[in-house]
Length: 318
Image: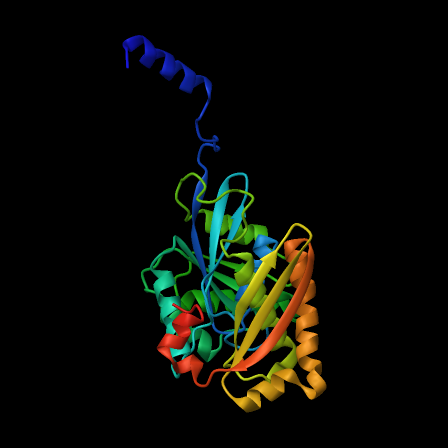
């Protein structure tokens, strides 16, 4: 290439304006872990902060099994949230051990930690999770959740003082994930720990999870919510077929249980419970995809899958 040709090429590339989009000076971006005991409201809090449903919620423990990535982008910061499983104090099956390992590994990879307890006070299980945090950690924010259920607001101040005696929290923020209260204040405290950086993700992205993953989680959530205490914990969902066009999507899913007796519980009398699980899940998936959805859910028995390392890998648990 001659000197003249080289100069012409550089001029042409310059005219294309291939520079990356500018971000405001001082823009911050980083990873944030949300941890706490089972059912303290971690998933509800993440969903409320993001404004979209990225993590399933239920009154039962063990509903969140993976690190779910949710992204919030503001004018001056991007928050990349990781929703961890509720830490289990009794490690029984391989599934629970893997869930606890997920919690521990997450804490080593983030810029800030939101530790969630209920506004009515500390419980023994909260203290067990607190032991996971290094005493010299400077990036842990305590979120006192469910303030909307607290009848005595004056009790929050003594609770905040007692909490500082348990751990040197960087900040304490009373919130209501359910009502959306004090969430901007929580984000402001988190932002202080995020490094200055360009955004890691496209501003329009709110989760890194695929539609297939979100559909499977939606089906699992409806099963937990509909069956309540009847439902055994050994439940997983697989997406066996996914065909999508501009007009609609056809999805065939498998709901995996560990015993034949569990299968009967999920199906219900004359298939009523399974039909209702499918109906509720179909509606949410259609909203998520923005199109008509045909959904079939079949129940299959896979004995001992929650304590089988190979089975867990097959079902997507790392």
